[in-house]
Length: 503
Image (tube, rainbow, N blue to C red; front, side, top):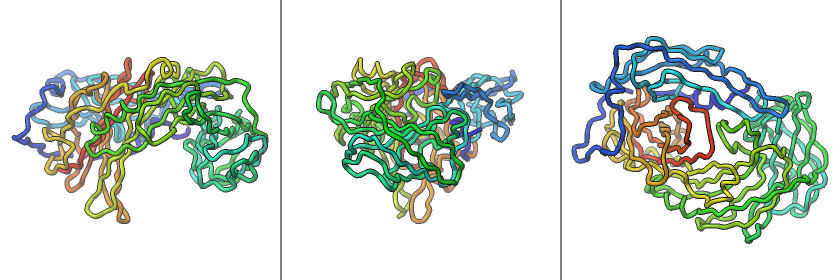
């Protein structure tokens, strides 16, 4: 089985235990929901269980397989709220996708799966996911692809090439360093060469399994209101079977799909930008964009509404933050008519972190919205949920750099000012230095429906420096604390970046 999206969050390391302490000059935020009696170890013991079915959605047919959990580190922690002590209850994972932890006292647990913690009172967890494409093999070494084709519309400087394979679930942009890229005005490709391993999702193609190599010309166009965008225009479809590490050649003719469509948005970019200082007082705005695509309806619970190409419309017309009403944007549609059209809007932000004199590391986060495409056209596009407010490490404001937080630190926050957060996800990053540059490694991720988390043993280590990303999620009808990889629409997400802190 290829590396499913489940494994992305299960293959990281971890690290803590000490005294967080109190800053007498600061008061605890009374609006913050925290663990109390539910954390205390109770007398009743139960068994914690979970299953991990992975459903692959492909044009050749869907398939469900268990994700192998036999190498996953499984532990259930309870925390005594009166002493702050964590108690570990070891568990096991199996090849059939199940996990089990016996004899766990009742109350809230921190279920550890690799470096992921699910903070919940539940004893049953759904660790499954739904993924686009068949169960295939990802390319892990340079695998050149050379394309020669005719039939393109005259190439423009704003055009780009978008590769995808509907059955395999492969996708990615042909990167700017590809050789043989078309010149302005060209109507053919002659020896375009790129490394397939550099795509976003480089699943090896096998024509005997029904895979088709598709290369789309995303053309620079202007909407009815004069807004520039890129729309699906012409597509090259070819049969190819790849062998990892070996070159493959593709040839054929670009043709224009018969089906067409329109997409329009009232994009309130200023509403996203207004939240910049809530992400972090020093956050810098980096980009804003909208994607619109289509997918099989079965992907409604997939990890991403838009995981990448094939794109029908891509809108990132300028670097401004002003509002835009596009009017109709037209596109040609090669995708199955039965597929659900979905859209995604995001505004990106960065914050820099530096250890000593090392070159700073730039952390990128976003505020994003995922909805059906019709919802984007029916109402203004603006955040569904904003960043959390007043983040703290223990009881001290988390936007400042902090020392002496202890290895048993807690993070807490108040609800967002905009929208309703149904869940929260906290990512903990450890900073380091390599070759004179600051680096960041994610060491833990915690899912919760509370407004606080306590960091379990070994997350924080003495002598190290960390920062946290606190995500607020609006995803009605689902719990990331019990089903961390399940998704639904509509959904929104917004991030906060703390300052640096150390035990």
